Structure formats: C-alpha cells, structure tokens
Figure (tube, rainbow, N blue to C red):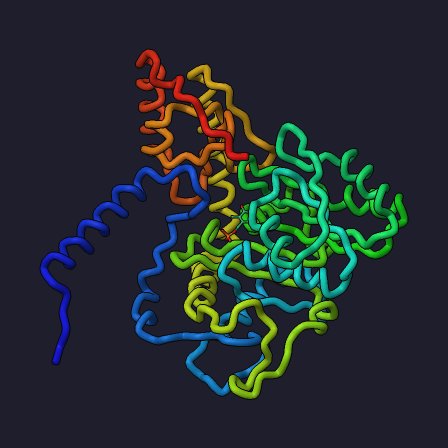
Length: 386
Ligand SMILES: *Cc1c(COP(=O)(O)O)cnc(C)c1O
C-alpha cells in the first residue's frame, strides 16, 4: 500500500509555498537573515537526528549530531571569551529557552535572589520568571530602550541583603539597545553586593556585536555569567534555534544521569533538535568569521541608508549606535501588514538583517511616500503593546 496526497491537498501545499515566497520578499520587520543558502543540508532531513541529553556526554542513541553541536558551542565560547576550562552550553530551541535555562541556573545558585530586568526586556524573561517562581523587579528604561542605571541602582540599594540576578539586554527587541554590563558591575561593586549573577540576553545582537567588537563589551570577560543567542536571527537558520553558554562550575548543580538514554539530563527539554546544530555549524564554516563580519558591516551600512531615506521623507526616525534596527514613527496599518513591521506603541522598526536589500528598502520607501500622499490613511490608531 502506498499513500499519496490528494490533488486538493497538493494544491493547498503549493499555494502555501507560493505565499511564503511572496511574503518573504516583504519581510523587513523581523530579525531573520535570509542570505545563507542551506539547501546542501536538505538531504539530512530524512534522518531523525535527536541530541537528547547533554551535548558533552555520549548516548546509547547514535542518530545525533553532538559532534557538530560541540563545535558550534566551542566557536561561541571563543567568540564570547568564555573561561577556557570552565564553560558549558547547548544548542537550544531559541533565545527564550536560553533565557529560561540561565534563570533556572541562577535560581539554583541563589534561591532567594531577586531578578532585575528593564521594561524593554523580551517577554520571555517575565514568563520564565513566573515559571520559576522567582522574585523580580522591573527597572525603568531610558528613551533609547537601554536600562535606567539610576533606577537600577536605587532598586538594588533597597534590597542589598538579597542576591541580585540581572538580565542585561544585548540588543532589545524593539530598539536594539545594549545595556552596559561594566556599568552594572560597577553599581554592584559600589553597593558591595557580592552575590550576583548577570545573564546577557544576546538573542538579537550578540553575534554581530561580538564580531564587530566596537560596542559595549558584554561577554564573559566583561562580566556575564551566561549568554543566550538565537540561531534563526543573524544566522538565518530555517529552524528556530539558539545557543546558551554558562560557566561550568555553576551548571554542575543541575542534571541527573538517566539510565534509559544512557546520558545526563542537563537541558530544559528532553529530545532536542539534532538538525539545528548542523545548520549552525554549516553557516559558521561556510562564511567563516570574516564572512560573518562582512555581513554585519553590510547590515550597518544598509541601516544607515534606511535611516537617511526615512529622514529624507520627513519621517521621525532614529538608530541606536551600532544597531541595524531602524526605529521610526509607525506608518499606516496597511503598510505595517504589507511589510510585516513589528510595532510597539508609536514606533515601528525595520531590521536590516543580511538578506534585506537596498531594492526592498527603496520599494518600501516608495510605498511609504505614496501612503503619506493619501490623505487620512496614516492616521489609523495604533494598538499599544503593553
Ligand atoms: C528574539 C529575542 C528573544 C527570543 O528569542 P527566540 O529565539 O525567539 O526564542 C529574546 N530576547 C531578545 C532580546 C530577542 O530579540
């Protein structure tokens, strides 16, 4: 007996594929790079690769890509200056899982700690805090999306007797603002809070910020205790994924040997995607550090170009230093849908990830110009996200 799709189902699938193609051409508002061709890896999809358990420990189940996973982890450990013999990590399902794992770890270290995070922090952090039943305090953000250090200092001062767990944003979701870890460390020192843990949520900008190395330092050498990134953003892996790295001595508090899988259960999920580590490895190998850096530079240039084009139209637009996210007055709902522009309150953004072209920016600017000339259309009330 062989099975096949019905004509109708096949038509449905084809229609979906065409729509994804068209929608990909108007994708400038979310951070997914589209310039890396991964098709060489497609034949591997026939294998049910599962990296269940700890990436550093073998397993009885051998249909896995742990070997690639370890190489990917080493690359990022080096990029983020992790302490040579004292790091551990794994390939996650995305930045959110990396944040969850790191908060879990921080709670094991400091069960009575308080988590401090700015109001510009990604929504996964608040959810994870709830899941872990942690105590937390939300800190004000500055206008550019960066944490307000004065507010942080005050809140820390009021709770000096409790360990401080701080989430530093390395590129906020909306404006790509970077919190200053050295400054945060300075505050902790000044207040003599010795028990502290700093997690860098570097999901968005961590990789290119580290490659460019020109902005505020945020890596292990700068004081981070754990770092999470997303693999489907700057690296454009077609499967959502990410990397989390932590100091190994912390991690040794978590994880149980499980006879059934013949390995150690040190990660959040059980079964883990075994394809994503190969996609990550492939991108790193294919482009190399220098290729990656060049892509980052091209993104910066395009962001600058986009900013100028928007400003030339008389639109209020701005850009954080070293960012590829251009923030501007939200346009009409029609344009926001057509170009898939994430919007929060009065602001929308374009993220110049590799794969976004000048031609796309020009086409968007043309649409925006037309829109502005159509009376009434851009006065649609905006939904406030909070
Ligand atoms: C995208 C993002 C996340 C979440 O990452 P996922 O890979 O979507 O789970 C977390 N924090 C920031 C700052 C992000 O931009």
